[in-house]
Image (cartoon, rainbow, N blue to C red):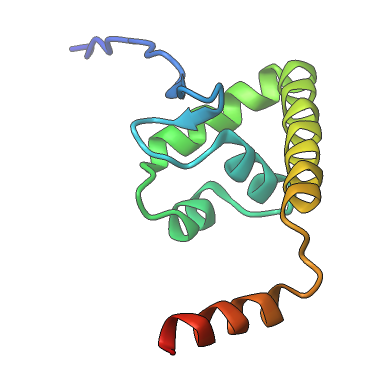
Length: 113
């Protein structure tokens, strides 16, 4: 008596949010975060411990997709790093971080008075 196993593939659990960021499953955890943890040596199980909203099967699927499409994903991640750096520079230009503690304390003193 042989048992038939039905092999069904499912889509990679990635979606693009409104900002164009790839998210894992129905969570807000970014592909960037999962792959960074994986590249730092975390196992899928450890990643699920770090981000308890993730399903283990989804993390394995995302890692598998990454390994099969590493050049494409690495290009996406490099572009995301560039975007983050540009945003950081823009925000620092707009909102000078130097002296922020004094400005916040002065604002707080003004509100309290």
